[in-house]
Image (cartoon, rainbow over all chains, first blue to last red; front, side, top):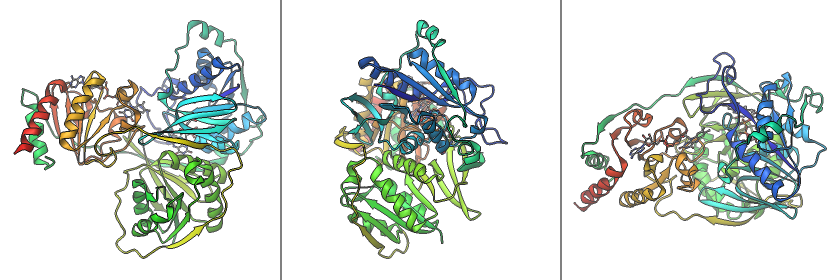
Length: 258
Length: 323
Ligand SMILES: Cc1cc2nc3c(=O)[nH]c(=O)nc-3n(C[C@H](O)[C@H](O)[C@H](O)COP(=O)(O)OP(=O)(O)OC[C@H]3O[C@@H](n4cnc5c(N)ncnc54)[C@H](O)[C@@H]3O)c2cc1C
Ligand SMILES: Cc1cc2nc3c(=O)[nH]c(=O)nc-3n(C[C@H](O)[C@H](O)[C@H](O)COP(=O)(O)OP(=O)(O)OC[C@H]3O[C@@H](n4cnc5c(N)ncnc54)[C@H](O)[C@@H]3O)c2cc1C
């Protein structure tokens, strides 16, 4: 069973995000870049499949050269090799361009399962996996909180508003996993050491036959404005001196909800 | 006039609540067509008309319900090529997102996700989406040819029936749906039963955070909610800890709610949480930390211990209701 996991490097979500007022792009300078925590679950899901069955996990990321750090992190967790799609012409890629580049980079190779996060922590459009599935003409099993791969099929528990659906697709298939699917492992020192010697292949746009068809040249949209949202104002703050509950109940009465 | 389409998701012939919101927005932007797919879809025509659809495409094949995304994508791609609308609006739901995303790749058109508003601008569209937990509003304009696809977050628009609405023109499609290609098929549906109103519809929400300390302490929230006829919600910290299933989660990566009253108990008020509930008419917060960010937006904030106050509050509510 061979698994491909799509991973994105993002600014540390624990640091407040910033948008460059001029370019309207995410500020990536002077902030720590990390493997998207959502994608750690995707890597973990991939590792669990090959540990049960035989096979290898390849991780792929599209991003600047620095994104190799996110790939190394996944390799340290146990993934076998990495592919970095990087090219200055890919700067400013939108989701569709990202998906097109990933699809082109893996064309001709066969994977039983391609695993993604449901949505990135920074862009959070959640569009890339479905677009990737479309470009590769594969079924998409989305929002998986449980995944089983066996006998040429993938079966997931797909999150819904009030529970879950059990959904099945033949392999190969694209799967998106939610944070609830597993506990992502922490790389051990040995894994970190081994990761240094694992292969990371770098490819550019011309290598994947997409010159002029992705990134800046193929932008489908542009951010033209960014303004702070209006904040709600604080009302009355009181300290509980044994009468807190009474205050709340009075307020609820005032609001005519009791 | 611009051609504006709405992907009208229905469940057994009833439009999902978000669909009524989409229709309300769409009819203000142009001539509106709704596409309703799946068994029973024709039953939704009257409601879709009430909310301003001038035309409704209906296709009742079971595949639209039982096969994820691809049948809807095939059909929409065909209809869009024929009618060439300018804008197609989807709800940011599980299925809406899959269908819109696949379709954007099929057509090579712009897809703008997480939107809360759409306006006409210079003969095109300007789409507003919140970023960084809703602290920033970004405006995006499409650049690609073909219809612009927009995913609107639930509760971003207040649904209202159209002032004047005639019966829509209905075109019922029956062409066979090809599912011979490999597809993702639903085998079974499981619901996690929750008592009381649904979070999305509830007028009052009692929501718990990590400050509750332990999963069993949600019992007092259930009790309070029962007294108030409220739904119970939770922060992601609670869901991540496994105290409550994901269907309870409110926020950026959970549900967006707009109740009359939102009661936040032991919730710090992180941006990613408040983006999902700051549309509440009134916010009440109880938190032991006077510096908790939730107090910056609460109409009434009580600095104190939830373990003490909530049981008392249940009694207070009971005694007031008794009168
Ligand atoms: C705040 C913000 C909002 C944006 N909104 C949009 C938008 O609405 N539409 C749009 O087209 N672009 C948008 N972009 C641009 C977007 O960040 C990039 O196009 C990005 O590469 C893909 O979109 P995403 O981050 O939304 O990924 P998502 O689709 O949310 O990511 C889901 C999964 O796809 C995989 N994946 C995503 N990106 C990569 C990658 N670079 N390499 C490998 N795997 C990946 C991962 O498994 C990830 O978990 C936005 C950017 C920002 C900063
Ligand atoms: C990309 C991304 C998406 C996210 N999406 C969501 C989302 O959809 N929804 C969401 O909720 N979060 C989301 N988060 C997480 C969010 O940032 C916060 O971590 C989370 O909301 C915190 O939950 P909490 O308030 O329950 O816990 P904490 O932040 O730990 O707060 C607990 C609060 O309880 C108070 N407290 C403790 N004991 C008591 C007591 N005895 N009595 C009264 N008060 C007490 C404390 O003072 C504290 O304020 C997201 C984060 C990221 C990065």
